Amino acid sequence: MIRPEFVLRKLQLIADDLERLMRFRDETLESLTADDLKLAAVERILERIVMRAIDVNEHLIRDYH
Image (cartoon, rainbow, N blue to C red; front, side, top):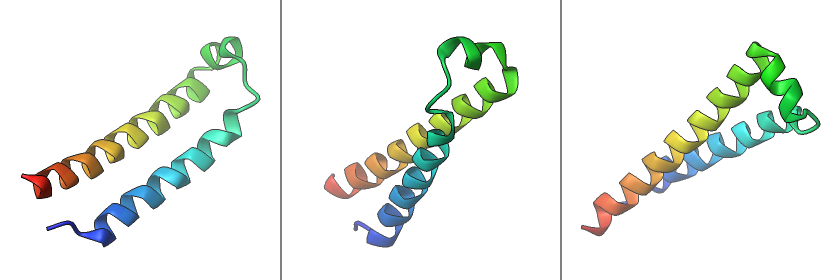
């Protein structure tokens, strides 16, 4: 059974992380790769977005089967 609250919560967390990524929108690739902390932050935010998207998809697929 699809749990809308689960899906909505994950989507909200993804939206929050996308907002966090906006802090880095003016950074060049060179400036990100030159700063280990900035690069690690961007990588981690992207990782969280991907993992949450996987969570939503697995949840929906589970219900489909």
